[in-house]
Image (cartoon, rainbow, N blue to C red; front, side, top):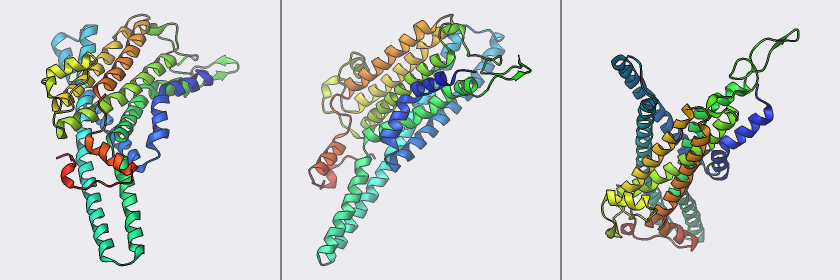
Length: 352
């Protein structure tokens, strides 16, 4: 059985990024909690879809090739469909959220109009105060529905379930069984080895598997949040924005600009580039783990995965250098901070 101190340390290491977001951002707002739960369900669907594709393709490959496949072929057959399924479900989730957001904002605007009309029709100062209170409530609701907070909440929920499925089984097997003894003699059990002690694997001979898994879990948790933020930025631009810095060219040119750590257009081409970059960095993270199939491969895979995390974070920062929030959300938040209210529906950009 793995020592409790080692188990606790690995839990803190593996789940620290998602737990920090969960307690500092998500749990403070009920709307964000709902969004995190829905994004976790999106990951569950992507895992189900990619598993189904793997079962079908592996069966076909086994029947055609007699069951013999190369290591790199197996890695490609697992990584490519898995990344494609996760990107598909991320984009579908974000697009669905934007449609729901449109309905919510429409409902909020209708409520505001009705409140203003009721306040105007009534007499006395009390009605005016009541209307102001109602506006304060709807302002608070709309302030929570911005791409930054919702992207972080969605990435947190997605990363949390991914981390539990990626690392939770190993952690449970290492800490859930205890050694059994009969008359002073060892009777079996204890950890995933079934023979007591801590599991070590040839892919990382000098490091316990729970530590290696915790490092991978931690880095993929960070990456899941980054990829979700890229999808929020990219899908928003694809749906609602019009390119204003039109000198950047099409999607292919924007992808090269992004990979060169440049600032992409705040429009559909830039949005497409963000989605391509998210898929490319996800593939890079998946293939970074391929050396784990060799002896002491973690000496290569862990630094490579760390480089992908840094690369993805820098790409997100550079792509969104002009501001992560769309113009209407920035204007609304600025107006709320100054005690002003947006007027003119024509000035707002909503998802169609």
